Length: 380
Image 1: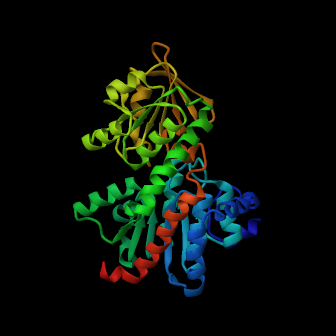
Image 2 (image 1 turned 90 degrees about the vertical axis):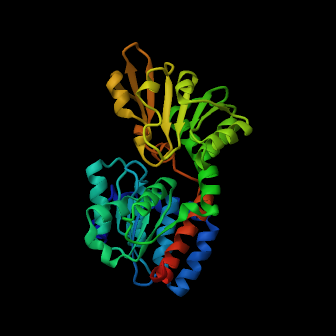
Image 3 (image 1 turned 135 degrees about the horizontal axis):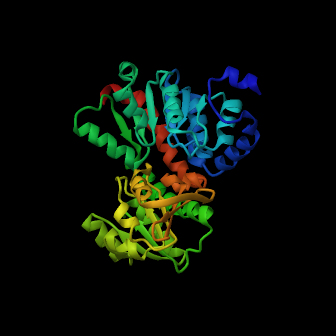
């Protein structure tokens, strides 16, 4: 086993998990017909031949099939995790052993290790970056500017990353072209609405085993992800409240049948809270202070900054883990607030992320965007 990791540059938890990972990758592949069509063509045409591709994505069974497709197209693929808690260690092991793809990802890695792994991918001097949250691009522009000369372009998977990149573009500091894959209709219509809708509730239920029927669920943000969670929660019998700062989206939520109110009001009556905004501190100290005893707070936006966890810790007298993925904070008056998955993406922290049939379309976009970048980067 050690000989495999000696041949393939990697940092993973346990190569011995590869058998389990291989079976799970195959299972996901059965629900990814679009990506399989692309892989068949890539194997014949090799449109990515000789290209080094640095990918920072959630290391899941679906991502594994994307990495395998990119390699089939001739790319040298290097993979790290885009979230410290989203790596499926058995999948990482199979990618290394069965496909000789360098992976740098361990579920539960600390912040230092997270950035070490990110830099391990950048050490391969990628010509194309593939991000989920724009961390590769951010580090390249701030600390690894030496790599800019060889990079022809990149792709971005998620809303939060696109927001970061548009800000860089507006400030005229973005140094290479990037395809905003999240803007594709076959990505955000399906992935964000149906994928996030189902997988977020899956993560909350796995972490808590709470009954949604009859429970007041507060959905924070009514973009495509928020729409999906609100729709699925209502379908399971929850009483759904939406908080939204955009008047038009708030009106849409009303017309879709949901109660809409400011977080200051919703905080007092909700039982389960889910943030999906891409913004920072949308649930803050003053909201935690008025929540009911036993409130459950989860985040399904890309970064855990949507929750002001420091603010909560400043008013809590104690903290303990009561279940896997559930941290219970006890306030001065004895009320308890439960944070799921350390405030990180709950659908990947406590569950398996989006179903493969959803990621099939999203990752087909990624594969085709990489091919497009090779062909058109000089014109962008």
